[in-house]
Image 1: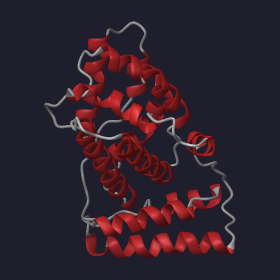
Image 2 (image 1 turned 135 degrees about the horizontal axis):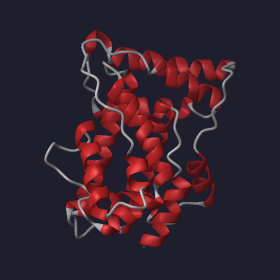
Image 3 (image 1 turned 180 degrees about the vertical axis):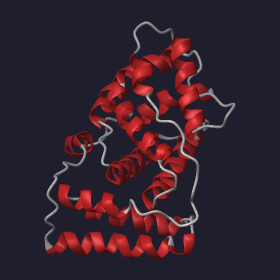
Length: 247
């Protein structure tokens, strides 16, 4: 499968198997409800404290590498601690800590959603802008492209504008800071793994429906963790709808 179909595939993989239960769909589609008043109960405080102690240990002394086992533990603890809006917001604030030694120059904000939503632009113009944003954000290499002038990819992106708004928020927060937070490094690791797994599945002609379903579950969990880290909602309900049209 050509590389510029990865965006379409990623959207499709998120719910290619409408095999997810309605309960899962509703939970993933709504995202976490945020509340402004962080009055945590005892259970919430313990759950958030568990996240903080494990993550602080992983990143102590400026370490920026996360092992597979550490990532699994962090992922599980964040999911557990994010069951209420209050504790999800507390986790978000806790993971905003700077990791020592990660100073970097600020990059520009992104506005992928606006570029994609431009009704006067051609597929080639939109693809060029999106690829440029992704290159400058470090999501893809400086000479790589994911969209190009592919109309199918652009059409899928146009339907996914709510998700792109959330993506812009994440990339802008990451770009305009002059350091990396604990959450940035966790999210980067998760995103890298998602892209790697999706690409591998796309290039495997013998991939089974069971493998796709398993990847869907992993992607759902990782997306929910990234939502918590940045306080965004990727609107998976919208992606579910798009995936249904792509089947």
